[in-house]
Image (tube, rainbow, N blue to C red):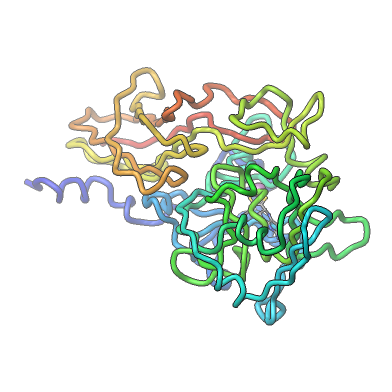
Length: 396
Ligand SMILES: Nc1nc2c(c(=O)[nH]1)N[C@H]1C(S)=C(S)[C@@H](COP(=O)(O)O)O[C@H]1N2
Ligand SMILES: [Mo]
């Protein structure tokens, strides 16, 4: 007889292990090149493209609410990631037609400002794009184009105030150190509306999980925009402009947009809105099973289903789990919150089960009553996929 906790451990040997799976739903072209690889400062990440570097975390990483730095996903649009050496003597310029006096801030200047901490999910808008059927163009992400970390640094508003913000300011524009290699490739530039830029939780992070930012996650400084998709989280931040104008960049006006009205938000980004499309901004509520893993054999005495749920910052009110592909749902147990923008861990103890195959699913509801979509809200970018996924396990 195996008793108590021992039975749970024995029931799901791979829960503590690593997912080695390259999802079958990915398009063939991606499956044939996708590999789990180590890279500087990272271990066992799923490489989807090498140039530019795009690496997803394996799903077992999300058994914890904090994603370790060496398992945090990597997303770049441009090929020439700056070297750590190139960041020696780094400084940040704050200028634009809506500041009183342009300033050039050194790292020591940022360290002189008061430090703010936020625990937040960074999720690519295209997370789980590769699992959409039919496939749409873009990096064919699994569910690992996200992570949650403890970020620390000065509030962006304090950085902007060092230059003095004029009342006519409309947007804040951002640029990083990675520049296009070829003429004609649009530089990666993004902007925020004043309200989000002045939010005390929007920070210029200098550390991630109490360590310097990994190079591939934006060393030495990156923007943290809690509740908003990763595209605004500018890495290797070098230039900030406070402007009376909207930013006309490819990455604001063409890419990262969704059909107007498809994904309701609390605070529209008005200066970047047109009649047909809006920039993708606030996250949608979502949840993911991190264990057991697809294809696992589990004990008939029962096992624990665990995972994380997250949303745009309202907080998670409920997670339900199904063992039968969505026919019946049970409430999962929610662990304590580590922050409104962070992952919230959930678990469900199945109890004894008959032999057979089980289709595990989970779905979350936010404090405002936002629910996950039952069917993909089709959009050209394949953004905001929060349709519950299925993990199939076998009880033998
Ligand atoms: N400088 C720079 N910052 C960037 C990007 C980029 O290509 N260059 N990509 C953005 C996008 S789309 C995402 S999803 C996040 C990913 O952050 P990560 O690579 O630290 O996981 O960074 C954002 N910041
Ligand atoms: Mo992204």
